[in-house]
Image (cartoon, rainbow, N blue to C red; front, side):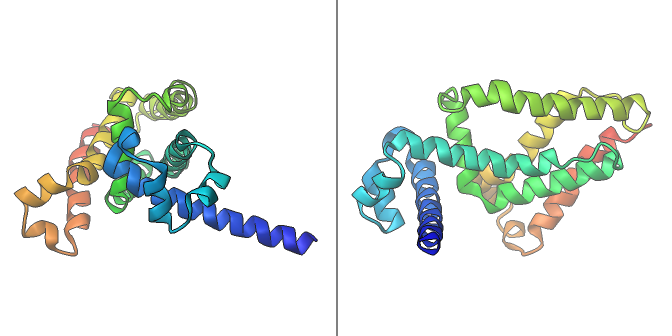
Length: 208
């Protein structure tokens, strides 16, 4: 019986993952209001009743997709080491965030749409979990500044700047390709873009 239960649990986990991946594509393309359970079920390759077994409501799928997106994005942010070299820690985080944004444009678009609509599904998360984490990392940056290891900048606005810059390459990909049609097609484009952003950003926060 235990083997059967474990197998069923594993299959359920796989099916939930398939549903969430399909929902991400649908929600990012049509928004919450424009998406339907039928669209998600079709994208997931399963029947609507089967999907509803895992998620009874469209709202449940939407919130779960958003929570998973935020968890993925915030993991490298949490990993910023207070005992590490400040510039190197922020460099690593910026590169990771930029890579994640560029590699997961659907996640970026989903989150941006939620924010633009007033964040009705994740408002509480933003005011509690996210605020607490950002305040913790801002305190780390303040400590680095107090130790003379970074230039005196506002920690919260520095974090906002990193987020805005790294999201640009996902949210405005069409614009980037229109302005840099040849460069953006090159395999080394992302590395060059990351180097340019980091040079501008990190030179501004190095101690002087």
